[in-house]
Length: 347
Image (cartoon, rainbow, N blue to C red; front, side):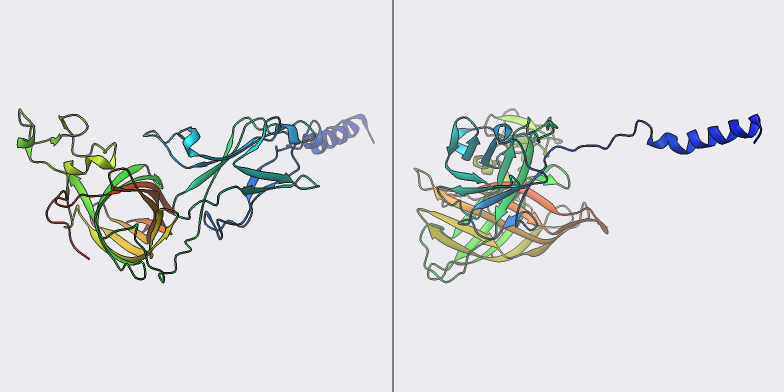
């Protein structure tokens, strides 16, 4: 073989081997998941929560916290001891329950001291700095959202959850961030806990004379928490601002839908959930497939029922385009007798 042929052969060998030169395999850090969750739900709030890892972490780098999923107006997790159900720290130990790392290090079993209600949504946070034996470290915390399947059976007497009018605020985070305001008129069978409800879109009261001086025609008068003129799309900051809203049941901008459900009492609170229904909005053209509300209600010192929970949908259609599952965190309160605006559709 001549010099030219030998040079060509050498270049061909280098070219064919070059992808292997300096090639490194990416070593991912341990990634956590919750065993047994299906579409964000676990079957039994009384059962231990099993956290699984893609590879065994170094135990001294593992910090875990379980909180009620509460976010601020910008979607950031609100850190509060009142929202914390469980913590695991490799130095300080466990609070709110117990945990056990498996012998091979691939799972952590968490048993909560007090089983949580099935209505609200929760978040399991694995702190940043989680490392494997090779030293590969997570640079950001991992947040795993989950809830529990409804265990309501509609066959027991109830006394906490009451019939009447309710106001709901839903902070939607999937597929797009938006606030939905709803009035609910709910009938309750106290012998069984069966509920029948009519849920109607709420909109800001655009009567300009409510403010002094009157608002321009493009604005709405907000009386709570501070009187001022605001754009009609301004979100409410609290369910206690219900008096600034009126029902809007009519298309194209409004909607109303019926949903049956269940309520059950437990330790002074009441869990409430509706059966899945399809919700159609004309403008914009949006369809929620198998939408359902779930929440837990507790009376406050004045007797007002206050609730937290979630709105979920198996699919959100924008026109005919499937945008994936829908999800939003909700807060709710009962309305006082005579305090609800007129025109809320009855179930």
